Length: 208
Image 1: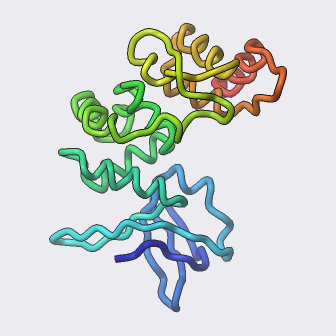
Image 2 (image 1 turned 30 degrees about the horizontal axis):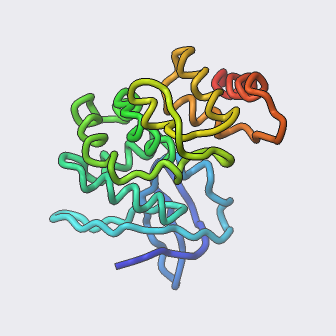
């Protein structure tokens, strides 16, 4: 029904924002991870929306990118995952981190979301792992062909250079593939940068 709503951010609280567009204040539920990326109130915002109709409610769910909104809809396609649970997962994990958790079969990361147990987390992985493309979530400068043992091998298959090696090192240190990839993604990998430098910068991020 709605592709996106573009207007003035009026207010926000908990998991809800109000956007004024066309003289209407639209009540939109968003993941908690979106709140940190919103502009200040009074400024313009563009929110991609998913309109969900239930017997007792009609609700708008919003996201800052179309890809994130599509991730929400993919979650709704998993048996046992409703809008509230999907929003909870995307509040716990950034969409790219969720994609990495799915590819690397990191059920523990997904199960950290409220109301999501180990069985449901595994179901999310089983249902969605064939729909996620690795190239959509790799840090810039990484390719797509080599790997390391286990589920992690599928996740980093084909990565090249110091970024791949830093992720492998972090996994060897005990971090999950999701945590390792998220940390390395925060590092601006410049030409000539060593694995040790990338690893050190990644560990600083993980320390917070």
